[in-house]
Amino acid sequence: MDANHLAATFLDYSVAGSGRLEAFVEGDTAKPEARLALNLPRLSLGRRDGTAEYLSGRHFRLETTLPRFTLDPESIPVEAITTRIELPIAEVADISAYSDYLPLGAGLELLGGNASLTADLQLEGLHVQGDMTLRAFNSDLRVGEQRLRGDLSLDTRLREGDLETLTFDAAGTRLRLDNVMHEDAEGRRVQGWWAQLDLERGRLTWQQPLNLSARFGLAMRDSGLLANLFLSRAGERPRLARLLTVPMISGHADVDLSDNRLHVSDLRLIGRNLEILADLRLIDDIARGEMYARFGALRIGLALDEEGRNLQLFRPRRWYQSIEEARSEMDSRQPLPSDWQQEIEEPPAAPPR
Image (cartoon, rainbow, N blue to C red):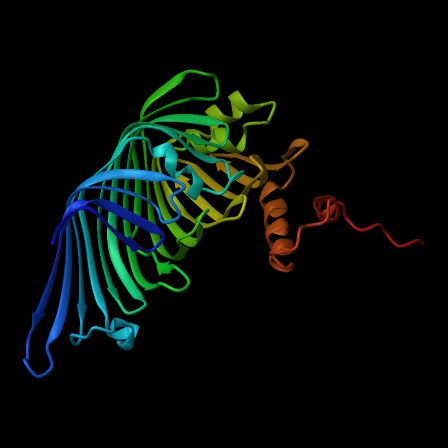
């Protein structure tokens, strides 16, 4: 059947366009299978509730197989239904439409740029897996207070997905930034910066905003962008950021993206004569956290809060470790008391003689 107005829904999305819907009865004549195939040469894709349109595409195909032919599809258990969804060619006119998937206040924003997207999903009952690829060129991004322009590649691997909760194992996903231009601590433009983030293990909940808890492997051309991010409100920013910018760094971090915050914990980066340990929280677009840095013989600690920064030069490694130990003993969902750093840093009063 050819029609001008065909539509289908999957996950949280709706596709619509002109195309062909075909029905096949195949297999054993006593217990034939049924197969439905929807082909849309051109389509638009948006939210199921119609509040946003994300992309236009070509050659969309959705194919559903039922274990038996019936005029009452509700009689077939959902676990027995399989579906394949293919979107080989899609164009995203403006990636800023996807900013709704980033938690407000987490310091991350897609500001603009166009992109291409491909998707291949397989559904078996309420279980889903698949791959999606996004390629964006000359895109504008914001990370903390820094604006970036460059190329973005996102290769998403979704495994062990649950359609009821929309949660997935996202291990194997890779985010890469290339040909990035940003400003250094002194306001000069830096070009050709790159970074690669490999999701080693973690779970993703596909909702607005996204919820992600994952372990990442990191590699970057240099540590300048991270140094600027952590030192954005430090009075010594230009001097310290320049000192802590070294080429070819790598490491790992745990990332928790949820609600209105981004929490980067257990961050460890190493490079030429440089080691950085950090716990960084971006909440309501304000950076808070602690950092320890070792560059050659220099060792410093830095604490950030809503009031500004606190530089630690006396035994900074011990100071940072004491904060980590204190944090591990507290419920991560409970806010730390306002004077917790002071309690750690000040030695107990000597008993009276």
